[in-house]
Amino acid sequence: MAVLIVEDDDRVAALIGRLLLEEGYTTDAVGRATEATSLAFASRYRLIILDWNLPDVDGLSLLRSWRARGLSTPVLMISRATDYLAKPFLLSFMLSTIERLVRPPSPRTGTGT
Image (tube, rainbow, N blue to C red; front, side, top):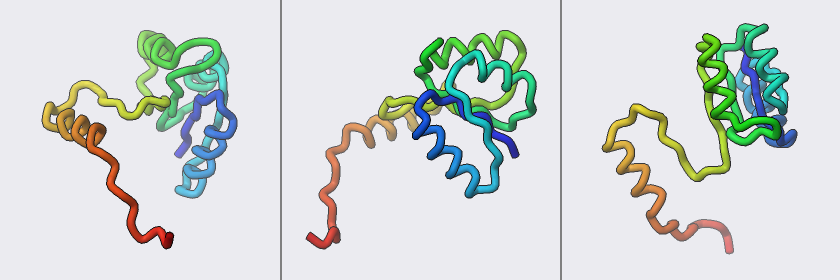
């Protein structure tokens, strides 16, 4: 199963690529929107992992342009945000996410120190 990774940070792209390879996926990785668009429409990817912040365009604008052109491949957006909810979502899920994010961190135990 092929996955397209659109990430301008080579280290992050390599890390994601290794993880997916270990799970049996094949990957292509690019760091710019123009390259990503060419591959997204020329190949049959089962998933596209798309960084929110690319050097030539923001990922959300890129995704909107792809959808307007008829690309229906599932897309997983990644960013440096703490969390993200995709619409539509259950309000109960939103509340549990908020509670998890604002909860004070628990002290570590068993670290050997």
